[in-house]
Image (cartoon, rainbow, N blue to C red; front, top):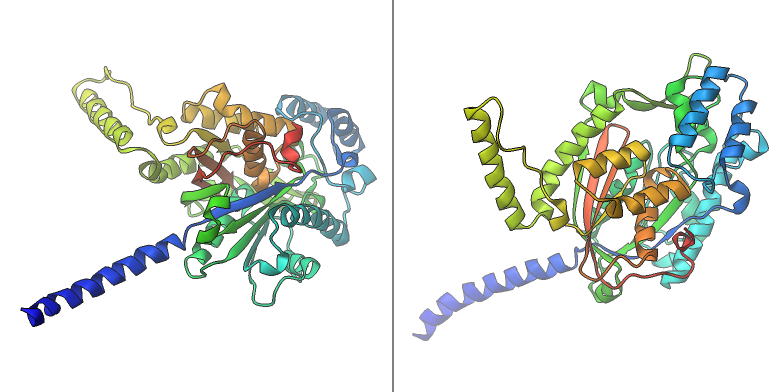
Length: 431
């Protein structure tokens, strides 16, 4: 009997060991946020409505109609009086900035934000294994990531990614890069540095599709410290549950709805086309279709399936259906919604699509009012608002949604790992 027993036992033990190793390795591939830091520019960079009006008057290419259009756009944008702009608009160099001006802008953000992050977290720059930097509209040589490595004297074998041209959705793309790297690099620290360069891209022409960007975009940035170390699980703020990326670049209308270009006079700026809302709706719909099964509970999926079948039967039997088209209740899958602050219309549109209340939209609205559209970093200001208002409780789920040129829509779900409250030194307690 013993040889027969061993004959069966050894393969079973081997299989059990392989399964245990597989699931144990999975535990080391998780992606946690240990800490994050949002950038608050200095008070001398504050860009109120009065200063915006003076800046418009200074722009020689603007006629009376363009001036009225811009002033109306600023007033109705949802942006408040305490947002921040690049230094060149205060020194009068916005029409002819130098490369040095652009580098000074990002270096100021790098040094302030990363220094505070390392100080708060207790993690040394030399411990960082993965660095992902995304600044869409500025590319230098050496890269912006190299500037960080040089300033903070990071180690020689650090894995570095310098992303450009990814637009306002680049932040979650950077998180996805770190998440994928964590699958093959155990016990690692990763940092995502996300911002935008406005210095070289402040538009000085009179094309309405391009001057609108001056009304919406403001200076800001964030740095996020991530890890897959199992031993630090209890110190983590958030745990990544899933992440979905949607890219409609193959569709001409989506590709051409927003892009960097020069106008007829050779002024560089960012074009926002009339097809942008349609492109955003298509990308958003496809993204929700993919992420919904990953975040909604089985009961909500079952309810939605039954109501969809009833709606289709009702449509087939009558031209005027008795049952309305069913909508998923995303509040069953997430308690909080971290929305990209692309503008008042963007927040309203996403809120309507997800059937969100004013309470749900308040973090995005207040972030837009206080900091404006800080491009890819805006999500972290919204998260910071939630944290400052002590909304985030252990076990809560946070759904992040961002949009960007390409056209792209990216989303992810985080689980809150600890009680999050007001944090000293975080910019967002000062709303």
